[in-house]
Every structure is written in structure tokens, then in C-alpha cells.
Length: 178
Ligand code: AR6
Image (cartoon, rainbow, N blue to C red; front, side, top):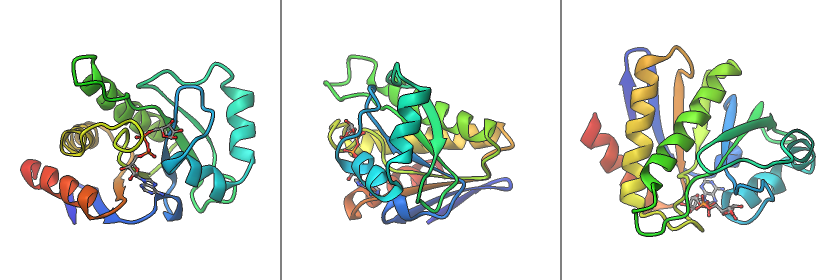
């Protein structure tokens, strides 16, 4: 499923973010950049040890929730991995929506600064961090639409959703906005 915004595109696919041939893929990391399960585990497994060596060397202080950092992509087909940290869901009253929006926005900004034309995101915060999928999908889609409408890069944002539930939530959010 696709939405065109001028000459920009938002695309939804079901699949594995580590397999995407785009300029940058986004990692759903933790604030210590310590690696973990879910997308983070898959990226470090498929990309190899150079990614963690680079985060350790360049970002020893980690990456606070809502911010993003960039590294090379090791053995992955993309050029870069953008590591961002979404919020842990704790009921919605602790600034979770603003932090999730910031994680998407700062990742898009970092992609643009690094001349990335195409970026693939997983659904941030909706696994181990338990953010409700429907609400997270709406934030992801509205933030991407807003960003693409106001900037030259990236030109393509692809959301790579794991399973039909995630795909359905993002498709509903895209239809709501499209
Ligand atoms: N491709 C696309 N989506 C995936 C993939 C994949 N290969 N693997 C899982 N998902 P999570 P979070 C989906 O837990 O909630 C880690 O341990 C998954 O179904 O990866 O932001 C980190 O180190 C879910 O919908 O990220 C952190 O400690 C979504 O991606 C913590 O988990 C995000 O799930 C971050 O938690």
C-alpha cells in the first residue's frame, strides 16, 4: 500500500526490515545502545559486529529516548543504520506520544542530513516496549506525512511491518490520513 505526497512516497510492506535495499534502515534500539531482542537483535545478527563497534566508539553515552544516532550497516544491504529509541509504554501519561513522534522525526532528520533518499522503519516501541499498535501506527504515519511534506529528503519512507496485525494497523492509519 502506498501514499504519494507530491513527489514523495510512503509505502507499507509486510516483512523483515533487515532485508530492505534502501539507503538507511532504522533500529528500534534501547538508550544504552546495548543490543537486545526484536528488531535490534535481528539487525546486529544480520549486520555483524562492526555496527556495535561503531556505536560503542562514537556514542559511548548511548542515545536518550526520542533521539537518534547513525552508523554504517555492516553486512546489511542498506548504507546506514539509524538507531533510535522509542518510549516504553507506561499508560500514556508519561509523554509517550511526544517521545515516539520525536523518535520518528529525529530519525528522518538524520536520514536527510546523510543524503538518504530512502528509509525503512520497523514499528518503533510496539514490541518489548508495549506501545499500543493502533496509536503507535497513527503517530508513525502522521509524523512521516508531516515530515515529507516539508523537506526534500527522504523521498521514500517504507514501513516494514512484522505480521498482519501491524500491517493492518498501519494501513488503517494511512487510510485515515490519505
Ligand atoms: N523486521 C521488522 N519488524 C520487526 C522485526 C524485523 N526483523 N523483528 C521484530 N519486529 P521491538 P521496541 C517488530 O521489540 O518495542 C529490544 O530488545 C515487532 O513485531 O523490536 O521498540 C531493544 O534492544 C514489533 O512490532 O522494539 C530494546 O531494548 C516492532 O518490530 C527494545 O527491544 C518493535 O519491536 C525496544 O523495544
